[in-house]
Image 1 (cartoon, rainbow, N blue to C red):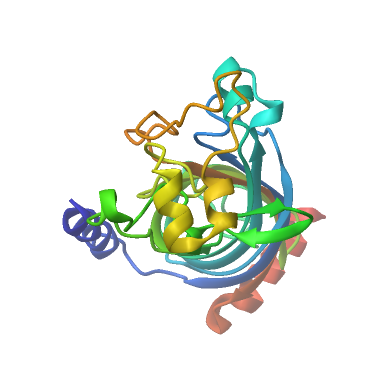
Image 2: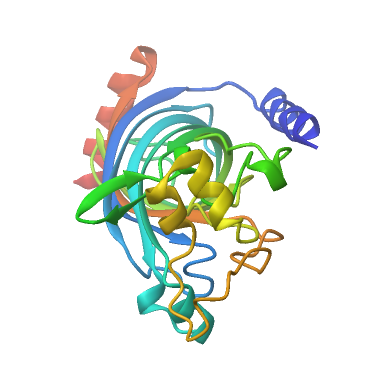
Length: 283
């Protein structure tokens, strides 16, 4: 499936005609948010400041290729959930996100930054491939604790010896929509919202069933055992071992919404004519 996805991207680029290419360097600021087991329904809940830097190669008036680095944070808290089972489960997490990706952009209107013979603005779509690092954490007794090393769902305990800890490095597929506006010969503004399709359900350290609290205590200690089950059920004295902790059939997501400013680096052969035509059109 992933191999066909890569071939599709290569095929699209092979069909692009290279004409009057330009480069852009940009930065953006915005927010990140997460949707998953601890926030199953609402976008833009628990938002955090985020930022991105990127470089873009414009092949022609409709197609571009960009490479970007994005930093953000995601979090959620069952105590602020809307479902009763969340209040009872009582889990929470936060994680920094460090992402790199490469994506193709398709402009709906003929658009080339700084070129007065094309549209000054255009909506666009983007689709790419990337990877990110995450590290879910939570506060316990006043200290911020890394959750992955604790195996909070009983990974590699006696009863789950074949269940391995999840990797904190994961692939992602960024996709989304945006609009950009070339308001100056060299400068452009843009607004973009992009989702990240993930291949892990452990962005929040929650996915499957409760592990055996006794086994977790024996192998990883008291902190791991306590954080594996923080439920506030009136039947809390009865072990939750084997009961549902998360929803493993649905992977987690995160999203980035940002406002960007970019600087256009034109092909030297066309730089003078662009500037001259831009000035003439503005008069």
